Image (cartoon, rainbow, N blue to C red; front, side, top):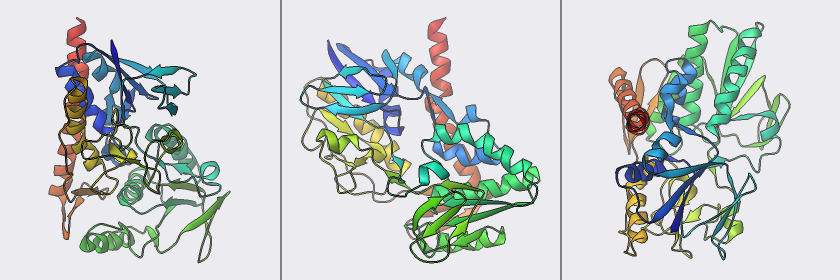
Length: 380
């Protein structure tokens, strides 16, 4: 029996697992390797921080979804690949052989070259780590009544949403002593998104009393202080690191073709350049047509990845795919309002938040609650 290993529980692999649940891969043993039983959907995390959602409403049960497709689950992380022996080395000491390998492990926090970051800041990724640590930070904020300085380092969509969500939580819970500072490398927050949306969010931050510091690049984090290439240091009681995506080290070490940053080069079929029996998608991949690191592209890659894996399992040629040119960004502002950015266009209002809320909830239900309910019915 041949073996397919799905490495990671990212957005693209959700579509693969759903495809396998609907049409199991006969003649193949399929195994999902992931450190976590669930995927916490990143689009709902700011709402959870705000207190709007329970964490279970934000989670997709990977093990339940895998069970429907006769997919075994190994709860561990990858530490390396041997592409001559076609094996995955795992953090639990096991070695897993494969005939086909699909990689969707998601990114790591881009903190490898920022001294002190992992010791003195709380990274937003992996999300499970942040979710585990957030209640303790809430207790610290609530218990300190003489001023608490919270810094959010990184002003992409995730950093802006997080700062605004925490501000809303502070209003709800009476944290009048909390002061929030958002720090980014560009003159305005949301670099890479429509200019009108950036100006609107900058004004909104000021209206909410969230301090904005732009055009700063951190060079080190020490206890209670961030130092920069230029400008004065910034002190903090707690620092959240939301600094973008970085690849794991093991793809390049294993000999997979990677771009200069270390993300895995893939063709339009999502096959890696030098090893066609290894595929990759999501933020860990560098697509033939370069695209930003965004969950939108990971979600869109999912059905393509599922089709390519099924085709290769049958000895057929996969179908090429070209990602869409633009991604729609829906950015919650923490007050049941949101901003939508598409290319040069930007819209905002309560209806945008309701649109985003419906999309996010439907996404989780599609892979999460529906999968769990179906699994329970099958077990009866």
